[in-house]
Image (cartoon, rainbow, N blue to C red; front, top):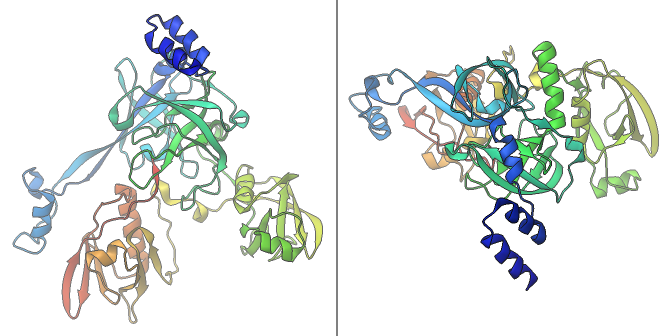
Amino acid sequence: MFVLLSSTLLVGCKDPEEQRAAAQVTGLPDFTRLVESNAASVVNITGVSSLPSLSQHGQGGDSRDDWMRGLFGERAEQPPGPLLPQENDGSGFILSEDGYVVTNAHVIEGANKVFVRLVDGRELSAEVVGIDGIGDIALLKVEADGLPSVSLGDSDEVRPGQWALAIGSPYGFDQTVTAGVISGLGRHLPGESNQPYVPFIQSDVAINPGNSGGPLFNTRGQVVGINAQIFTESGAFNGISFAIPINYVVDVIRQIKQSGEVKRGFLGVEVRGVTRQLADRQGLETAGGAEVVRTVEGSPAAESSIETGDIILAVNGIPLAGGADLTEALGSLPPGSEVTLKVWTGGETRRIEVTLASLPEAEEPRSNGVIPESSEEPELVVIESLGMILRPLEGGGVRIGELDPKGPATLAGLMPGDRLLSIDRQPVSTLTEAYREIARIAHNRGGKGNDLVLFLVERDGEQRFFMPAFASNPHQPR
């Protein structure tokens, strides 16, 4: 009866102050003042790039199906049309009144130009000060003064069950407000390139395409995170959202401002989490820490007394719950840092002092689109989003190897043993070329679900075209 009466009061009140008072009676927060104070600090981000048009001769009359049919008919030799502008939209927030703006790196990935649209309708051209691909963070600068900036909170104080609020531009609807509660802390997302480094804040705040880069506020109106990911099988909000903690962001921004790049400490170990069974075998009371599977040649770990099979229990006195905690802890330290590791070896605890090196570029995720050169040809190339493995042909060339029976490549008609001739009309004769072409496509298009990629293969002496679609990733940037 009390709840029904309070709900009636909340609906019936006309005056804003009465509504706030009624909200307090029900125990529900009222975010009106928070939104009024911070909405102007939230901006829309647009990244503009140029990608090939699928239409012929630059005309808009031909459909994608017409173009596909042309591959096999009289227009097979005609190239795609000219470059047309493509846009990626997201959100961001003003970090300081002199024009620094923060957003997600994936919002502006591949963009030739970046624009920031303010709440008053002004659209300003932005300079990209720096990008951290691992952290998925981009720092922008616009030429303006006196801009309304956000207040930053302390993400270390965030606790599950607290209220949180997001402001952003989902599906292009600017200044959209959504609210929910903090669901969990220190989340690591399987399959994500930044998974070991970013301890995501999980919430049930509704986040959708276009919210990426926008702020996550606490009830005091302070930014505690950047909305970056959702977990979904449908492509839209499914009740699980992830934000990058603002303390992590502040450290990244500090490094970008100082040197234009972000450096992370590197120990040089491959690890896995400690299961209950492994803990029992090793004589550990609790299942925690990171078991060393391999040390990287020439790394600080290889040059120390760390051995395969050791279990790293703590870094600088901070216990590790699992393998991801080790990477997160080391990645938050700059190269040259001296760390003390608590290591379990053969039933005994020992302490090892190690000086961290710099994380090699090869360890960096490819989210910035930079594909490293290598003089060594890989043994195989795994394309998970297409459900296929590419392998070398004897005497040179590339063949289709194992296929996921229910994967996109199989559904499109590709078969093991097909000789791969080109990807999206780009000839490939080595696995390295195939890898670089797939990486280029994933960078330019985002490797999103239902995005087609053209394969030309040779089978039984005949050349055939196939167009598998990238499978949707349940962890989607927003």
